[in-house]
Image (cartoon, rainbow, N blue to C red; front, side, top):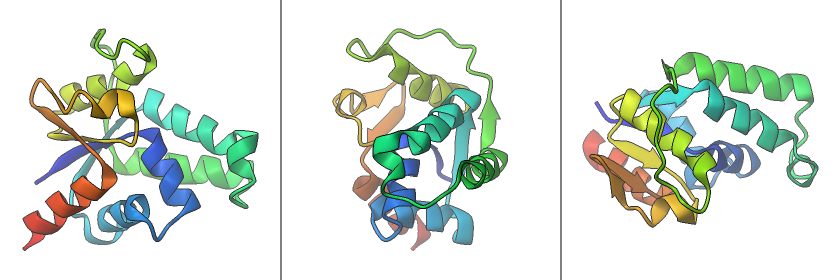
Length: 144
C-alpha cells in the first residue's frame, strides 16, 4: 500500500478547490482508501492555522469549529508520528523539515507538496517528493 505525507498546502488547496488535484487526492483517501495517510500534530496544526489565515478564510465559508472538526477528522485517519526526529534539510524554510520527519518516522514513500523548497529536493532518504498531479498519477497507476 502506498504511504504518503501531505503538505498543509495540499489540505488547504483541497478545501478551497475540491475539484482540483489536491481535492481528488483527499477523495481517493476518504472514499477509496487508495493510500495510507501519515501525519503529525505539527502538520495538522499548520493546516488549522493556514485555514484560519484571513487571506485564506475569504475563500471558504468554514467556521473555526468546522475547521477544527475537519482537521481532527483528518488527524484521526492518519497514522500518527511523534515528530521527534531532528533534521536540518530544508535550508530556506526549516519549518518544512517536519514533513520529512513525518515521512521518515511513518515509513512513507511519498511526500506530496506544492512547496518549491521541498519539491526541489525530489527525494530524501527514499521518500519521493512529488506534486499533487504526480501523486494522482502514481495512485491511479497503482490501482490498475
